[in-house]
Image (tube, rainbow, N blue to C red):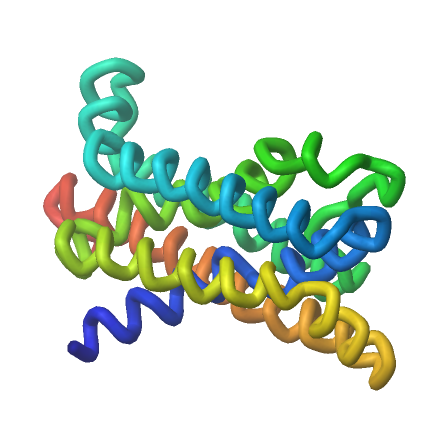
Length: 202
């Protein structure tokens, strides 16, 4: 149970629901509640398919097709997370969106990917099964995406409240710190895995 909770919490931090609330609340200003609901569900479903496919076949794709070892993916993916986390800490934004973009056009890009199924969560989908187990990772993906969907469906109301009390930027920066920390841990795990493969780093 602890592994499942830890896996869910890590995925939620990587998915970063706060940034989804920010983007959807902006796009929803010119859309109805029903339109927002449909697009949020569609984006979540597409992201779910992408993450499950990567969790099930990521290692095979990396090693058999691209000839890439998992430690290399951990190091590079972790570096991406550190960079994204630093940007969030510095700018208070994970992703810059065109406020004039229609919500229906954003269901796949940027909502499904890269905002939900982006470099962070794709790295997690590939690497988490080795640490938590495939079953726990798949359950955690479903749970974390469900939590994110609930927040996306309430994005307009939540965004209004966060902006009223000037909390949006602060929450994004806090999440950015968490994401950067997870990224650094992924890089260290990759370096450790690489070292063990060569008899260990002394």
